[in-house]
Structure formats: C-alpha cells, structure tokens
Image (cartoon, one colour):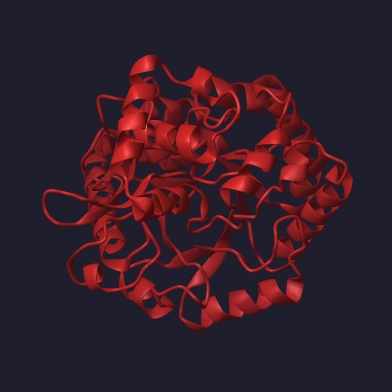
Length: 390
C-alpha cells in the first residue's frame, strides 16, 4: 500500500497543464474553485465541470485544496450562520461529485506567508523564503500596525529599521506585495490599509478565543461531513507562529491533540504538512505521524532549512531539516497498519532549469515539483522493498 501521488493544480489559468502533471507521474490532482469568493457556495455544476476537465486528461480529483473558511466564521461575526450554511452546502455538492477529502486552514486573514518568492540558492535555483527581519520591517515601517513595537525585541527592531532604510521604493513595494498581494491558493488579497482594518476585526480574539471559534466551526460542520463521508483536513499554520498581532492555533502536536479531543468526529482530520510543522524544531514529525495516525487524511511532503535567526527557506525535498526518510518510513507504517493509500503531494518545489525562464506560480513550477515527486516516489518504494511490503 503506497501513497497516492498527486500534484496541485490551480485550474485552467495554471501555467502548468494537466498533461504535464500526468507525465510527471501523478495519478491525481488536488485543486479548488479559486474564482469563487470566500464564503460563497461552490455550485455542483462548477465542481462537475472541473472534475470532467481533470478526468479528460487521464487524472482523478478526490482531494480539494482548499475550501476556504471565511473570516466571518473565524471571528464568529454577524455572518457566521449563513457562512456555515454555505460551507455545509459546498460539502454536499463536493460529496455528490466524488470528493472525499477537503482541506482548509484556520489562519486569520493571511494564508501561507513568505517574504521572498525568488530566493537564489547556491545552485542557481529559486526558492521561497521567510525572514523575520523583513516581516518586522513591513509591520513597523509600512503597515505601521498599532502596538507592533511590543512584538519585537530591540535587536529585531534595529535590524528591521536597517533593512527598511536599505530598500528603495520598488523594494518596499515588492515586500508589501509579497506579504499581502496573495499567493497561489490564497483566495483574497489586501492593501496595507485594508489589512490594518481587517486586523482590527480580530481585536479581542486571542489564541483561546480563536480555538473556541475553530471548535464551534467543526461542531457545526463535522456531523454533516460525517454523514457525507467527507474528511475535513486542517492545514497547519504557515509559518507556525503568531504574526501581525494575530494568533495561530494549529502549530504544534499539543494544538492538534486538543482539537481532536474537543471534536472527536471521524471527519475531523489533518493535512500533515511536513514543511509547516517542520519549521518548529520542537515538532517531532515521525512521532507525530505515529501518534496522530488515523487523523491524517492528506500529506504535504516538503522540507525547510531553518536559519539561526528564526527564518527558513524551502529546501530540496530530501534535504533540509525535515528528515524525510524517517517521515516517509512513518507514513509507510501507517499505510500498512490501516490498509489505506494516503494522498500525497510534493510541495513548494524549486524553480529550476528551463522553468527559470517561464512564468509560474511561486513554489509551483513543474520541474522542481517533478524532481520532488520522483525523489519521494523512489524513497517510498525503497522503504517498502526493504520492509518486504513491495
């Protein structure tokens, strides 16, 4: 029993065509209807049209990434109830078209965040990078968020001031756009003025309150998902630390244990992202797979290289700090023990070789992900052979 190999596809506008994904060795894609605004119902006809497009290319679609949770749900604002009703209806429509896994996250306002989308590595390839000094420079000197100074120590504030002073106007605009303008899979984007106002909408919502709102969301939708046979899988915070005065609540094994204890429904599951969780050195990734086991319904396999000052960049899939051989061995044990093939995708590949001259979504060029998929496939098959399972 081996993992189901998938790649992410952003729909008809994705520079990477479905034919290329199939040639890379994937049997499925994970995708979403990114053109539908957050909080609105995904019509069954639109889901069916997307499924037909995927199947015409000789691929399958059983995993959604992602069905966004609107901020009205995360804040429990006045629109909470209609947004919950819309989410349930979208799940109904997805189940009717054969979708069995639905990915979501509970990060306030921003999806995954990076400060450099084209960080040049020693070999000339480009990677995504996150740098705390750049975050602080944006927060303190561009966003100018009230109370931001208290979130950074003297050393960080000084470094942020130097970095900001060294940036020309184009550099400052690039930093702002990188953090706020929306990344692949992020269905909303902001200006700094809008972002500052949206942060105010989270006033008084600390980590405990946000966790309570997450539990309320799951209690409202999990019984429906149970009945539909859909597994909801939460993507961990990326990066797994509070930012811009906003809490993060899906960052550690303790966070996940609490969530699954509070909402024990079978549909309450996890998208195990080794990159997001691996940013924290206190997360034992193979051990978490062993212990969380049956809750894992989807895998993002990637590795980050941690930097001394708390930043990180995307490493090659078998390099960096993740320890991918031990992770894949743990996944293999889980698959054999439960007799199921867990959907997996290689995440955030490097932009390299011929893709350096092509337009592509940051982190989602073809060749870097194809390299990752091939490496992960070979690693898994080697582990299976050594264990006598293949």
